[in-house]
Amino acid sequence: MNDRRKIYEGKAKILFEGPERHTLVQHFKDDATAFNAQKSGTISGKGVLNNRMSAYIMERLNAIGIPTHFIKALNMREQLIKRLDIIPIEVVVRNVAAGSLCKRLAIKEGHVLARPLIELYYKSDALNDPLINEDHVLAFSWADSQELEDMMTLALRVNDFLSGMMAGAQLTLVDIKLEFGRTQDDNQDIVLADEISPDGCRLWDSTTHEKMDKDRFRYDLGNVADAYQEVAKRLGILPLTHSRTTTAIKGAAKKPAAKPHRKKRQP
Ligand SMILES: Nc1ncnc2c1ncn2[C@@H]1O[C@H](COP(=O)(O)OP(=O)(O)O)[C@@H](O)[C@H]1O
Ligand SMILES: [Mg+2]
Image (cartoon, rainbow, N blue to C red; front, side, top):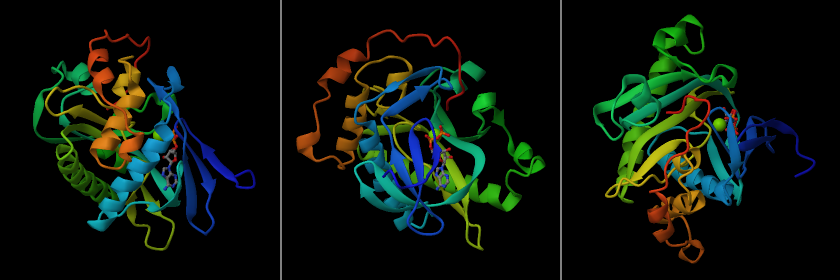
């Protein structure tokens, strides 16, 4: 690990140079941040679970023809990925109102949207990832119109597929944040990047609407690691011997939410 060249260390992951040209090793940490790193901590075992979950989901997306950067799992915390030129846009798809949408438009959390809503945010920690529209993307040449169309179409397909997968696990996909990049070959195809995990989705228990994602960390709801484990368990990607019960999560949801002292945009 020491002789590998570190390309980038972010809030949740580290990127190392991969063994072949145009590849990277993505290493998943237990570190968690929220509200633009105003809040930080660790979620024990998160990196292992997110690595597994993202690998599992991206493998299935690849299988149904949605191109992703995922090549193969390497170990508990690492996966081999295609190195991309990341487009500095976060594509958020929402099915149910939550988070910043509720604040911005005074919508009640849990309001079921009549159709999936796509929002675009400019990826900039310094600016708190501001909400933008398609014109900004084109006017600043962050992507061309074909790339933008590809990103939006792929985002909706990912949302459809994942909503179904989660429903089968008694989970509601409330919203999801996606990143895309261009392949570094001549084609420069648009490919799904980063990760798909409870760090970047909102997942609620379908019946109780209990939060099973990073909101447990954001709002100090407790039992964060248990919730991530429960999601993995329900998706069938955690050996049963490693799983724990969810009884603890249930009671913890009643704890009042702590107010962050500064807001960061999150889906
Ligand atoms: N296939 C890829 N090629 C290059 N960069 C990627 C790829 N997938 C994800 N990234 C970038 O790697 C970083 C992942 O680390 P993370 O801890 O999430 O960083 P951040 O703090 O910037 O969100 C992100 O900046 C993401 O845009
Ligand atoms: Mg990130």
